[in-house]
Amino acid sequence: MKVATAEQMQELDRKSIETYRIPGIVLMENAGRGAAEVISDTFPDIRNKKIAIIAGKGNNGGDGFVIARYLLNRGVSVRAYLLTDPKGLRGDAETNFTIFHRMKGEVVPVPSSKDYIKVKRDIEKFDILIDGIFGTGLDAEVRGYYREVIDHLNTIQKPMVAIDIPSGLDADTGKPLGTAIRAFLTITFGLPKIGHLIPPGIDYVGKVKVIDIGIPRRLVEEERIPTYLLEKEEIQKWLSVPRNPNTHKGDYGHLLVIAGSVGKTGAAAMASQAALRVGAGLVTLALPKSLNAVMEIKLTEVMTEPLPETAKQTLSLRAFGTIVRLCENKKAVVIGPGLGTFKETQSLVLKLIKTLDLPIILDADGLTALATQPKTLPIKNRSFILTPHPGEMARLIRSQTKEVLEDRVGLSRNFSQSQHVHLVLKGHPTLITTPKGEVFINPTGNAGMASGGTGDVLTGMIGGLVCQGFDILTSVQIAVYIHGLAGDEVAREIGEKSLIATDILQRLPTLLRGGI
Image (cartoon, rainbow, N blue to C red; front, side, top):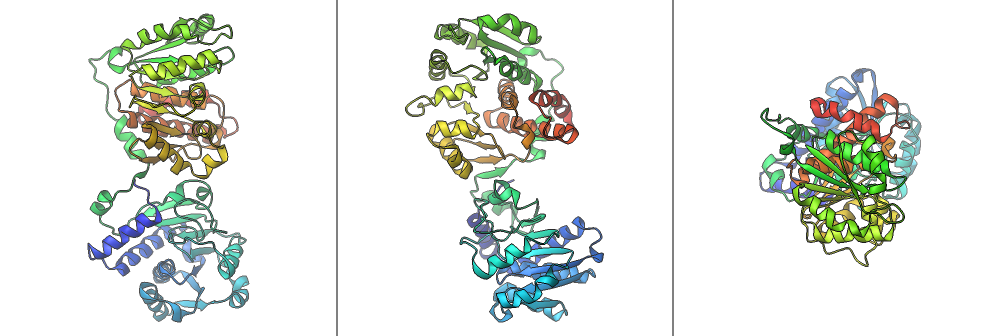
């Protein structure tokens, strides 16, 4: 599903009206009717509830009056509080105000702070509040009277339903413009907005429901909107193809994992096991020779390749030639989990990145090695995947973690385009960006996955899918979505605090069997 900015959504509305000749009032009608249906479904006992709609002077308020009208027709007790003089309404909002008024719907004008003070206690008595103050077009800080209203509404301990976006929230960044409604449910129109899906907006919107308001599907498909939300149906489509009965392990690729050092063998083990769990035919772990004995015991199904090591028991630059030969029959290579940060090992990583021409998934200490360069390497390999967390991303772009967190979408998109790489920026939520500037937002995953080893599992999953012949983007999408989904299922059973990386590994077979 495409994810729009405020400007892109306005352009879709404009073209629907001007090119397809769909009257704006029809779009507003569809929006209000759809929202009323969602509200009725969310609150099955709605006829026993009293609902207050807080309406602004623009189209968001107009949507509110349509909702009020449909609820009124269903026998629901509803009252609208209009935060402006009715004489100031224009266009479709004025039309729907008039219709609701002529239906004997109750409207209380509260155009000033003085008026609002008189109704504050009445508003607090309603069972459900509907926020129709500002829409997605808000681009200035909320001040004065409107800020007073929003701050008061946030103190009321009743379910708040936001129309299109919580009032005060920036639709593009998810940041409150001074203040913003904290909603229980957000009903948005046409497409989700970026601000619904990324922090801090994700903490303001509650559950998000997207409804169709009649914007032509062809128009949405043709519009250049490069941001998407990963969806369950797409992942299921890729996973539903059965294996050919007349097959063998070589048909599913051979992955090389270059990983491990003293004290960090777990990272190498989990990445290797994850690759097998997502269907890789063969996995070979290349590791420092002194660790080989223990890893042969630890990993039953994974082959190992002991390599020359440094005095610190990390991979030595002398392993370069052997690794290049090992790559000759491999479909992909994972570099980084638990490798360590010894200078010679980092030199090995950098030399491999410059030399290998098969798909490379770079993670953890591999990313740290890359970040030691004066500027990011000119990467010729067009099948290069980086999987940083925000701290690693900050090191790659010579910035601070705080700056990465403030603009994860923009920074990751720019990096992928400028460096010609696929990037998986882990976090809340995980983002996938491509060299074409596409951004895919992953809806799965939870805070319990902020635990050592979960990233190594994800890296192995990506490698295991790439080596089976899935294209780079498809491999990353499947791995990221299912990795998060496995974490969500485990968290529901045992809680977020107890979740560990091997829990995710153990859940993969059930999901890949078709249980997503």
